Image (tube, rainbow over all chains, first blue to last red; front, side, top):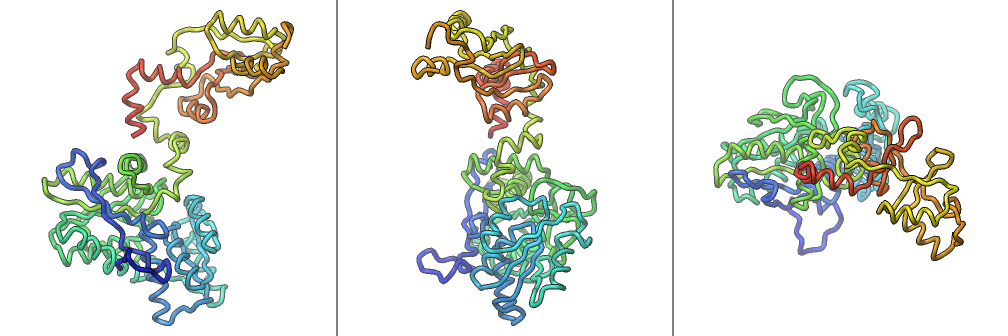
Length: 392
Length: 73
């Protein structure tokens, strides 16, 4: 699908796909080859999942399986839900999304704004348990009349959207000259579709899958939770055809968030955590490349979903992602590191006139205020000045 | 204001406190809200006052500035 900028479109559905490609020259500085980012986060709903959301709805309509007024139910980590909800909003479907608890509040807010109804499910629930987002969606389908699960995990239109869309765009944008493409896998539909097309056109181009530690898409291993959203699973979805993938790179939360923040800070690309995971992996691939070669990485979703997560310094600190590089110790350690200085305090009953003298004598601008030996607050030069000018 | 005006009559600001055993990331959470933090022990005694500027000077002095920049990048 190509989006023409120089014409008027009928609806947002026509604006999906046709995303630009940009050189990641700052993040990729020092790498021997060219690193290119495909900006899937610039899709109208904010992620590459818009492609499959829209395609699954349009194809189901074309096949006569659904009609406006029906209910669509989808288990999703959020972005597919947003893509589907966009299409549902325009086409007139009721949309119900089952969403694991881990997924950001921002995704829920966007989905609700698009008119979708949200049901949160426990993140820890195994995919085949009745409490999981997949299990809950199946149970809802049984009780809601005229409801359908388009099912991104098994729907062939998921990989086809990328085989006929994303991959074709990559080949066109690179004019057929690329040596590796790096893709983070969620349902695996993106990498399955892109790899099929790329390998058909360019058999020597490497296809590298990116899978977080804790997921088993790359192969068997311990299953545990991780913070990066929208990639990895504890099962292999039907659409995840891994036969054209040359190799996998495992990623961790720390590197993923660090590189995502670098993409934002240095490239000005307002992307999400999975873009960081994919780009970190692409940088490992690029290190082994030769000058003149090209590595393309897909940047799946945008910053909007993570404003209260990895984008926020406080969240990063609370999660412990800053500590390895910044271990100043405890507050007591910090106090000991500073030049020794007595704590000058005043009492509530002291005269302000004497406090001003203390400010002058000690060259300080603020003092703790005690009330019968207990901390009451703090008094600053500005407070005294304010009192002098305006009265107590 | 007269020469006898007391501190109690001047608006005393609320101040953020932090325990001596808190870590630097908890201190940064305080600095997200306030300019200074009073270090108060379990016995209620004020052990010190930390300002953002103290932290900046400390990072400069101890050569940790590079780490901070790396962290911010």
